[in-house]
Length: 210
Image 1 (cartoon, helix red, strand yellow):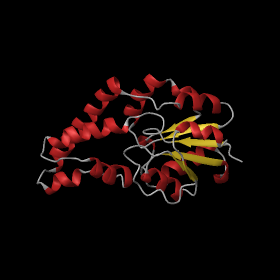
Image 2 (image 1 turned 30 degrees about the horizontal axis):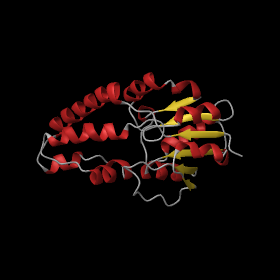
Image 3 (image 1 turned 180 degrees about the vertical axis):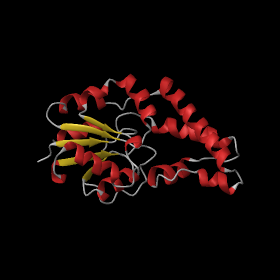
Image 4 (image 1 turned 180 degrees about the horizontal axis):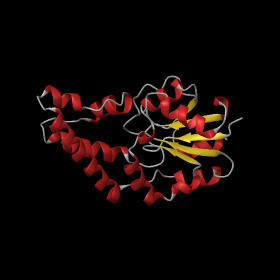
């Protein structure tokens, strides 16, 4: 029997992935790198490696790359403040599940970006705990984020379910030996979701599963 739901954030509750992609694409364009949808999906959403190694291949040093990373993060923050979109149906689903299940958000996002997002959503009232990228040593696809969520919940693995949208998130859940439902986005649609418990069309379908 499921007692707890661990939610990914970006792409599942809020449509922010396209903003991170936009900030990354604009930043890399300054050094002559055309960051395509396919590259972003491969490096960020499947493997969580980023694309800074491409800058190194062009001869850029660590100092310049650090400056570019900071520039990207600042741009992403500004985009979050002005262009954030909530996933359609997310508020309805969270409201209906609230109080019945222990719920947590498990994200690789930085805490400052996470806070900008949820100052606008009003979603945090639904959650018992939050784990951001700043709370772990290794982010997804490593198992650490979901193992920490499991420990925080105080429940057994078979009593918990993960909701994800990306391959790296799925691999993180599987590595933690947790069942995972996938809701693909336009950026993750062509990913390898083998091992997922279910693949859903939209967030509202979750209500028919609990």
